[in-house]
Every structure is written in structure tokens, then in C-alpha cells.
Length: 54
Image (cartoon, rainbow, N blue to C red; front, top):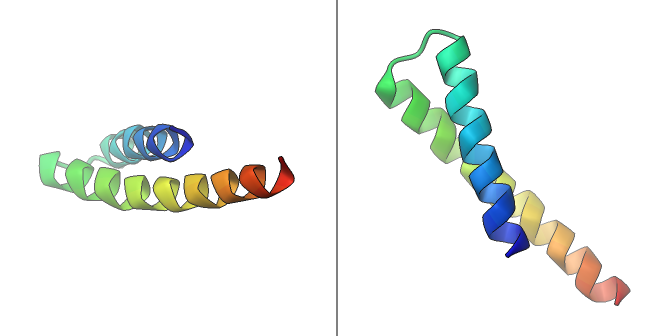
């Protein structure tokens, strides 16, 4: 669930970032996809750290 949450937050952040920079729909989709992948990776590392700590 942590990974999914971070990827959704990353996708929303990417779409908003592209919109603020004046991007079109495909630009927003690309930013959302890239930051969703980045968010998923960060979420993966966070979940690994939490699993090791428990």
C-alpha cells in the first residue's frame, strides 16, 4: 500500500508540475508517468526500511 500511495502522489505531483509549466495533455501524462515511477521506487525503499525495522 505504501508503494501505491507514493506512486499516486508522484503522478499527481507530476501532472500539476507539467500544468504549471504550461504543458499539454501529453506533457502532463509524461510527467505523471515519470514521477509515478519515481514515487513507486521511493515507496519501495520506504517499505523495505520499515520491514527491516520491525
